[in-house]
Image (tube, rainbow, N blue to C red):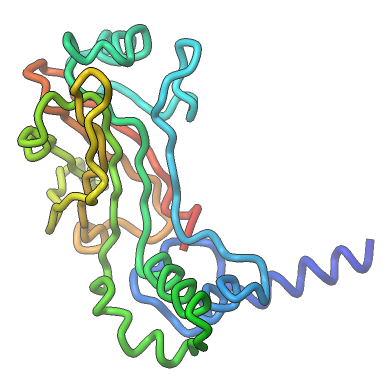
Length: 229
């Protein structure tokens, strides 16, 4: 028991408590870089929620609730997840990340190019990768009839006072492709500033999603900022 206890205590003192980091700090930067270079286990720098449907359930079971339109919106999704001609497109996963994840990409690139990277250097240009206080949401969707409809998606954070928080920026990943039926799938990207809305770095928060469909359905996906840096 003593070696296990000693190891656990060592890990607790070597890394900060797990919670989203709005502004990258030296301790977290060192942990992310050391993880990328294989000097320690890589710390969690993102949170993924799988919204695909298997046997009538979301793979992240219970992840989706109805925000508007009633429970029939969710039950309809679960019963016919790929009936895009009737329902419109569907979200298939979402991934949340912050400055620490941007650093993880930078560190992996430096390692792959046989270069070194220090925490000091990483902190100097942290805001060039992502401004302080921002969080990134990558929302993968499938079944969109036309790529022009990507802008029809509405995504909000729900603040602690119930206020709906719009993204400060939205864009797309260059991964959009048509399937055999001609329907498009790819990744929508949104940037939010949670702390300005009173959201704390370890809060549980709802992401609200309306697809391009003309129905009154809107969905809430809950996530925990305390699950990644």
